[in-house]
Amino acid sequence: MSGLAIEPISDSYEHLKQFTADASHELRNPIALIQTNVQVALADPDLQEPEQRQQLEVVERLTQRMGRLVDDLLFLARQDSGMVQLNQQPCPIDALLMQVIEEHSALANTQQLRLTLDLQESDTSTTLEEEPFSMMGDYDQLMRLFTNLLSNGMQYSAPGGAVQLSLATVIRQGLVSLQVKVTDSGIGISKEALPYLFDRFYRVDPARQRSGLASLKDQTSNGRVMGTGLGLAIAQAICKNHQGHITVQSQPQQGTTFTVTLPKQQT
Image (cartoon, rainbow, N blue to C red):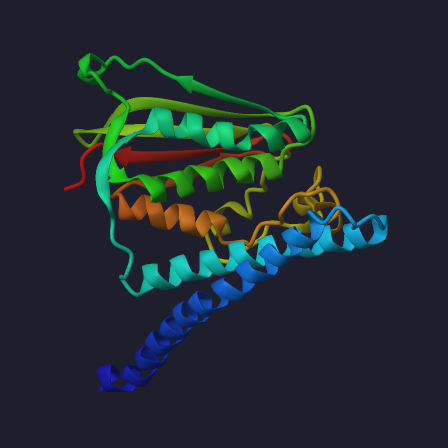
């Protein structure tokens, strides 16, 4: 009886997931077209009015934010529906992290943040491997995972701060894993908020959002693209896809560390 009672709810949930995926997919093209047209307008040499240029730049940033939200919703809808398939291949995580830092270096300079990568030696036998920091996984998903974490650290770090990435090999439950830590020098997260960080659309208290350049007003006026509240949920989903896990440690005014542990070989 309970199964029959819950069946309509289950069907509604499946329809909702399918609708979210379909709607997100259909929204991608018009958003891309809007952004392209705005960029063309901004490139027009006859555009000399500062007020018009500023309005177009705001439209461009908001369009970028909307496009990011649509991409995030589409990923999570496909994830919930079991449509996300891993494209397994050898992934050199050290090179991947270097690429992530390189892609964020210009923004980090603008925000006066220091980005660093620490490759830590290990006392495990894996140090004898030719590629001790390589694992089997989906390169694009892993790229998205660490991009989200680095972006999160940068968002909540004040000018003059730093975000450090560290990579090491560890043994967990008899398996050789890669462990990546993303540590920022931001204002930290309260103990009460930590259990909800990976919930979809969850945002920490307004005081944290107002830190540094994190307010909506600041982000739409200085070139930063405001987050969607889905980045950490996506990071957690990607970890699970690779049979890994993610944890967070933080104290107010002392920064935050996200730790990602991924097995080198999935079973």
